[in-house]
Image 1 (cartoon, helix red, strand yellow):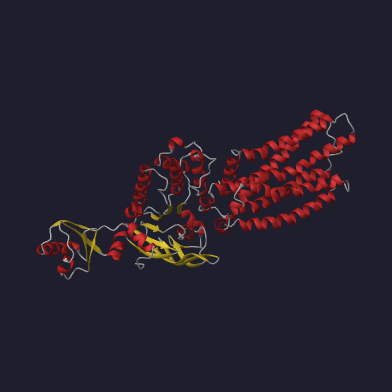
Image 2: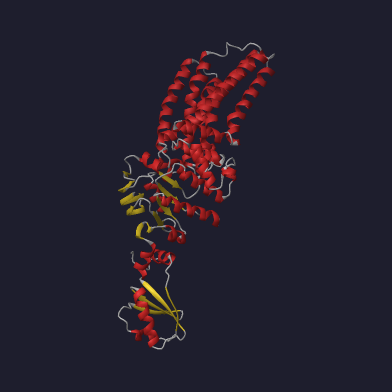
Length: 305
Length: 237
């Protein structure tokens, strides 16, 4: 659905996006993560045909960028970083203006559908300028969805929303996914990305890594078993002497054992520990958060996966 | 409804809710027409030369209004989009750069011309009612050619200048101040008339029209260049 080959954008001497290669399938929720100034917005602007790349190519829904940008814009929905609403117009007028620009036949029906979905129907005649931050964000989301785009670029869709509204948005993303719509999600909310995205890309001018969150964590950190012992004593890790163990270390009095296949290797590990006189209290898998992965990659603690 | 019309309707709807724009579009013409009528009626029984001067001065206002009115609308139309960060969502729609430019320009020029000519009509009507006969010997063909022929060119010049200035300004007041020199061409007949070097005649009007056409083409060329989405998203402050 979205393909990019060597997509690059320079502003004078500054390289904002450097040789980005991407392939995103139809119906995929793709998380695009990176720090402020990483070039995420520039990437979204290029992929939504708002600005042209300096070099490289991309195609959106099979249409190459630059060939028929108007038709690309008709097929994508963009939620920008700031809601960008006309404050002197009502919520209804804001939506109707964009609905007509997109040439939606049943504009009123669509506006009503999304105002109701985001619980803004009762405030449809209120000026957008009088709305709270969360209400503005919801109205901007409604605007991005009005023309039922096949591809959605969402830049921080839950920023500024209360937990209930954020859940509505996350549920909406899930339901859009079930409708086979492709979602390009820029977010700083790593937990959200972990939960919603089929694949994520970590990006800082260049693509650092891409993959599904779980595989990326395993690829970078391996799988590790945490063993809580009643009588932790150093030296026991050397006595284990099991061929499948790739690494052991003590962290906060707990033994961390790196394994390739914990499901089959953990029972052997526990038996061996008991043989060595260890009192095993708990055994669990070390959960690496996406935040750990993100921070390590951004700080350069790991090679790009 | 085509996109140009959709944009025009939105622009006018927004402008009608902006007090600063309303002041420029409605109150200023009302004030200028009201002041002119008051002065002409006050001098009704006085020196005929004084009445001629006052009447001619009043006619000058209808060359200034086409430059001042679009300036007010265009400044808030463009800087307003920047302040509300609405340009990116707008550019993400299938609207073309040309439609966007024309929509913004026409949203400023059309009301300016309508208000100007309507104010002129009201002025003539009030003169007839309050003073009696309109001094038709004063309302000469050069004046009518100025008011109906130069007004669109003056309005286009004003919009072009305002668009160029507004693309670089992040504050409406600053844009308003820097765009103010767009009223200068409207002052030319006033300056010539005041120096008594020559009377406003068709030759002068034709010359000013020609100059305005040349300047308008140049100003609008630069304004259109600035109105490419690439420029708007990457260069506009």
